[in-house]
Length: 327
Length: 240
Image (cartoon, rainbow over all chains, first blue to last red; front, side, top):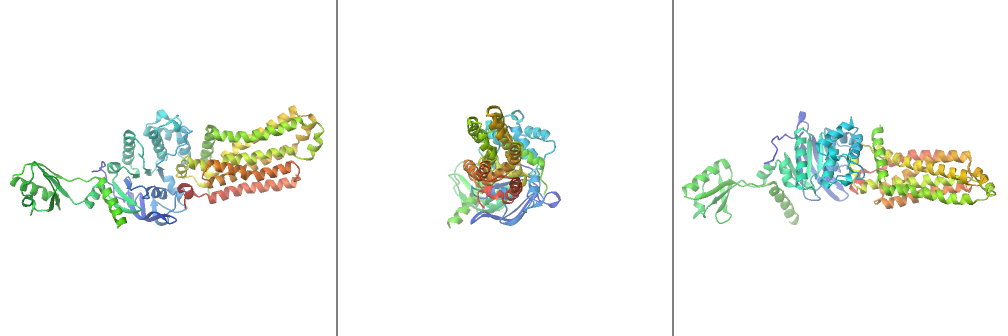
């Protein structure tokens, strides 16, 4: 279950999504970075973009951020079609936090932010800088040289920089890469707060628990788009629903207990006294299984729905790709 | 196309702050002008009064135009490849800045210290000559047309040198290589200045006007050409 409760649909305000990508491809010569990718992201949605190294995640961010031009396909970014002459207009509405903070290390935090506030032509930059520094909890480090900060603090400065223009759509490229758990938690809290304020967030990450916790929907990319959906949807789509039954001692005739029960499609033993049942409808199967076990005199320790994490989904998909590649 | 003066100023201010904290750039700015100052001063101080006749036939002070021909290219060589190497180019290019604004900001930031240094070294040279050289030698060297030419050509030459430096910087993969190539690329201009200074090419008002017009045009074209050929994609991804 994702940590988020609101689940906006891709078409948000007035039916226009914050980000719409249609059959987008990017090639560098013969090398394909990503191919034929289509998806939509709704306003205020936190959209996770997952994939192994070299899958094309960063290239996608750079393409949607108008740093690279697509080889084919179309996209509408924050309501503006992606085209050679719309770059500045798109970049005015979005912000990108690259994987590497890319700060001017000889300049102070405030000097870095002032430069970018002017590049975005932010009105009242001093006030705005104060607000973003408070948002990332860095007010007391404003006059420190960025080179003297830890990696976690630099990442926070980069996040503050991305917030300067009050973007409607924020691209975060591996925002917690290399951060310790406390710094990563701070970034998570910020992402959640931004999302609650209605900022659309496009998050690329390797950390699957991060995607599961923060994202309304996730897409898994490995050059082509492998799947897209809510984390729980993906689990259901990829894995059969199962019930796991644990008893104190092994059942003498499990086939007699489980065969013919409504909504139970099959079973297998997974350990000395553990049984995994494939079911078509949990609400029907669970009471029936319970009754059957009681009737058989079994000493039941637990009956529960089997849980698959987003990591299981991810690994399943990546394994499928690798097997297809070997085949 | 509207050029945002605020964005240009943001780049200029940031560059000047970076120069101030970057010892490598400060040394680059300081060493070449010092060479241009000390060597001719030593020569001038030992010249006898009789040398004034020979000096009055040429324009030896124009030799100092080598400073704006060489120093700015070495500084501008840092402009793009330096940002790329320290990983700051991508964040800047993700802002609404246009490439024309980015390049103009970089050029102006390199121009300001280069011209200031060139004028300062020139003023120091004139002061030393006026105070310590033989009076006849000093009066042969300190001539109003030469001073005027120096004042006029310094920013023009510096501007040209900067566009050459930025062009190299946008294509180089390493800052030090870009700096060496920048100095090399500035050498032909410095050689022309030296040939005029030593009267190999005879200096006339007509020649000055033609050269000034050519440099003015070169500066304008330099900005246009660099803006047209500035390739975000290659700079960000290293490929196209």
